[in-house]
Length: 114
Length: 115
Picture 1 (cartoon, each protein chain N blue to C red):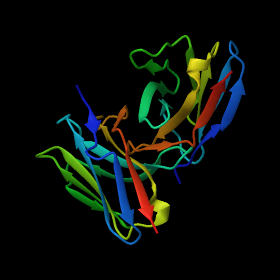
Picture 2: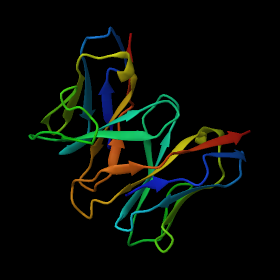
Picture 3: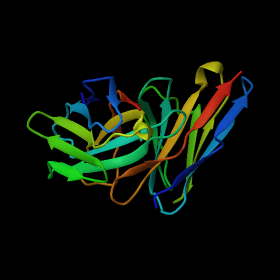
């Protein structure tokens, strides 16, 4: 149980385009999902908290207009990187929180912006 | 501010040995701690968790110890196997029982198991 999926697993896009990443909890409902960013050989950095049916809460320094988050259902949250630039290239990971407060992570999405 | 950190960035062990990975945290209000394993190119995988009302919890080949007095957390892996090679992160969640719980991750420890 507690499986979280992400799609796509890898995406390459041109600078200036937008990319949408999906995060799904497959066997449980998650009121809260989280989006992280991870650079090579570094720890995970929380970007935002996604709450079903309400606006996401962004961490300090994360542009909400650039990283659009939608949590339309209890099993799906999406992160859209708008007008992507090479500096947005990173490993994006989502997690979904169970009722016991444990976060289970997706496999991650490798974004490369050319 | 709140932070979770690790004493050792790398750890190399021989197959079959026991491994101990350490973590220090600074927020005395933290009441929930989690260990994750992350293999290259993959998302973190839940290993074991512990709440602040406990000082020890055991899983399959893994044991987490919590010392609230010195704000220290450790992960013990028994009979370490090559498949255990990965980066291990500790994280704390000071949700205090609410459903909103941000995780703060430590820097990670690279565990390398030599056959």
